[in-house]
Structure formats: structure tokens, C-alpha cells
Image (cartoon, rainbow, N blue to C red):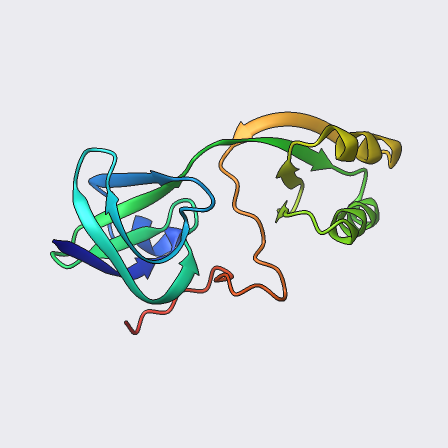
Length: 155
């Protein structure tokens, strides 16, 4: 069975050329060390890493034969949160963090899983909130053992 023992971040994978294969995984499936996987077009391979890492949307898995399988995240129902300015964004981020919510933090927005109670809180804080469906890659967290996006290339 083919093995994938190296992860390329999305930029590296793109620089190495278009992947011929993709594998679409949900959030739980993307935190792995060793698992048999089947690409979306039927290619079977073994993910075999020295430690568990968080595979991010767009990452590439290099197979023994040199081919790259691109990781795709399953789109999820999310809330997109936007603020009036950077100070307001910090306040919103503090309130979300105080509730220990998983969040994907970007320069102009924060994505969280849909929750009507949290949406009401965010509206009360003056945030712009809208429902979206897209891939979700939350921050790993300070005490998490998830990979934070830095990939080791020495395996």
C-alpha cells in the first residue's frame, strides 16, 4: 500500500504542481497520525506520520511514489463574525475565547460553529454576524497537541 509520510503546507503543495488526487475529510478526520485513507477518486494509501498533526484545508500529502494528494476540508455550517474596527475585533475575540469556542481567526473575520446563543451575544456586542458554509480550520489552542500549521519536513 502506498504511504504518505510527508505533509506539504498549502503553499508548498501548490508550488509543486497541481495534485491529481484529493481526499475530503471532516475536522476530526484531519487530526491524525496513522490511518488508511481513500482519495475522492479511489486511490488507497496509508497516512503514516511520526506524530499526530492537524491537516489543514489545501495541505498536500506526498506519497511514496512522489504524487501529492491534496487535503480538502468538508464545508461546515459556520458563523462569520466581523467587527467595526480592530479594537472591536479584539473585544469579540476575547468574549469568544472566554467561552472556549473553537475559532478560525483571520485578518478581517472570525469563523465559529453555528450557535444561536452565541450569535445573539455577538449581535448584542455590535458584531456583524452571518451564516456561511465553508471549510473550517480552527486555531489549535495554547494547550492543544494539535499542529499549529507549522509542518515538519524531516520525516
